Length: 77
Image (cartoon, rainbow, N blue to C red; front, side, top):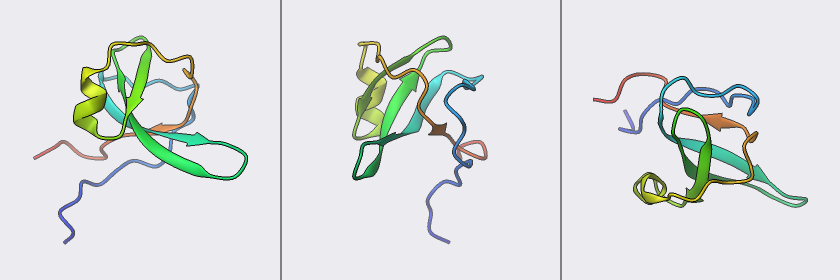
């Protein structure tokens, strides 16, 4: 057992989370794809952080409201 939490599959960014919190978001440019963390407040996404703790503190709304996201597949322990 790796100790890492089980995550959902990637969810289309047009579908929004039902629970506020920090989620992974997938960003992509012409040559690479990368994952950062962003906070969802129940109505909009905020800018990203490289850790969940950093993302939780960010208060600037992001222009990227429709990127794919994923979260925990089971409740945290």
